[in-house]
Amino acid sequence: MSNRIILLGAPGSGKGTQARQLAGEWGVPQIATGDMLREAAAQGSPLGLEAKRHMDSGALVPDGVVIGLVAERLGRPDAKAGFVLDGFPRTVTQAEALDRLLGEQGLPLERVVFLDVSREELLRRLTGRRVCRQCGTAYHLVSAPPRTADRCDLCQGDLYQRADDAPAAVARRLDVYEKQTAPLLAYYERRGLLAAVRGEGAMDGVTAGIRKAVRGAGAA
Image (cartoon, rainbow, N blue to C red; front, side, top):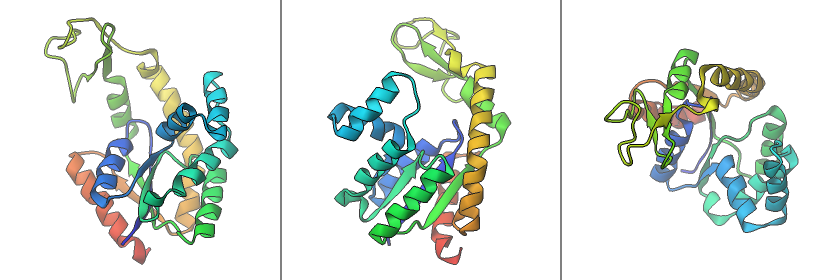
């Protein structure tokens, strides 16, 4: 059995952690667009250099460039047995392009899993991060707190909250995500591919929920 799935979720939903877990379990690549963009830029491919130009200027990488890089990555031998797409697509335009690409390869999607996490929990997760000013080690006030408040366990440096982890900034990020993702979820729901899995609670329980959703793909 091959697994060709997309894992969708808001910032802080845990989709990266779950994608790594499942990709390792299934023996398929985790294809995360952020990592893919950085790798392509470092390798200096034509598409990678174009992506780097946009990233260096702080602009969004155009759909055409992202889709081209995804096409290149899905063309590698290790993706023939399946893949877990993490962070792509982000828009209906990207989803339609992905459908065309996979259709040309005769490798249709099997399931799109949305990790459903309440806004309150996302705010708790994202605003709880603290970073050491001296060595950069990251902590979380709830899930991975330092032994001494406001001090790094490793170097005793001061811990601080990054500007993009402040409540107002996090709320804006979530607003943008919700506006962008609602049409995408509707798109996959119309195609009978979407499954929502509760993304709160123990990590193993969330993983089990995703496995169950993927196993049920044939009945969708």
